[in-house]
Amino acid sequence: MEIEIYSDVICPWCYIGTRRLTEALRSYDGEVTLRWRAYQLDPSAPADGQPLLPWLGARYGGEARARQMFGSAAAAGASAGITMNFESALVANTFDAHRLIWFAGSPQAVPFGADADTQQHVVEALHAAHFTHGQDIAATDTLVQAAVSVGLDQARVEKLLASDEGVAEVRAELAEGRELGITSVPTFIFAGKYAVTGAQDAATLSSVLDEVARREGIRPVLRTLVGSHATHDNRHPHPATAGDTADPATPRIPRPRTPDLDACTDDTCH
Image (cartoon, rainbow, N blue to C red; front, top):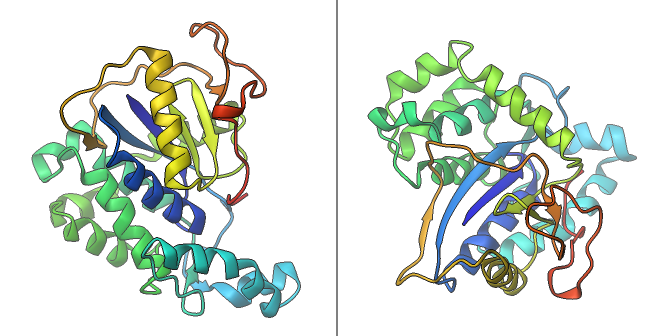
C-alpha cells in the first residue's frame, strides 16, 4: 500500500500526525511505502528566518493569541514524544526544504546515500530542526545539516540547493495538491484513493489501514516494511474521500459515506 503524505515542515500537526502514523504502522501486517508531497502553508513566508510568535502575533491579534493557538499542539506533541519550542521557533519559507524532501525520495538520491527510509528521516530531521532546535528551515546550512544527519552526501545536497534542481517537481506537487482540493495538512492519501485529513490518533489510523487493505484486497505479509522511496508513480488523478464505497475505479467521491472511515478535519494546519 502506498501512503502519500501532504504536509509542510512548519506544520506542528504534520509532525504529530507522522509520528502517530508510524505508531499505527507498527501493528499493520502489510507492506507500506510512504511518500511525502509538498504543501506550503504560506508561500509568501520570508526567505530568512524570523521569530515565529511575533510574526504570528502581528497577524492574529498579538503574541498571547499566538501562544494560545499552539497550546494544544504542544501538549499533543509532548504525548507523542515531541518537544515543541514555539518560543524559539523561526518562521521561514519552506520551498527549499521541500526540494530536499523531494530529492531524498527520488531515484537520483540513491547513489548519494538514500535508501527506502531516507525521505522519512529527512522530514523528521527538518521537523526537529524547526520545532525543537529553533533553526532557520530556509537556511542552506540547516538543510545540509539535516540531510547529512540521515546519511545523504553533503556535496550532492549542496549542489542541489545551489541549483534549480527539484523546483519544477515541487511546483508540480504543490499544483497537484491544489487540484485535489487539499486545503489543510496533514492529508494522508491511502492507495491513491482514500483521503484522511488531520493528525488522527494511532488507533484511528490503524483502522484506516485495515479497512483500505480490505477494500483493496491487500494480503498481509510477515512483517511491516515502512519506506519512503519509490521509482514510479501510478497515482490516481483524484483521491476519493475516506469512507467512499463506490467502485474503486471511480476517481473522486465528494464526501464520506460510512462512519468507519470518516474523513477527519480536526488537528490540521490551514
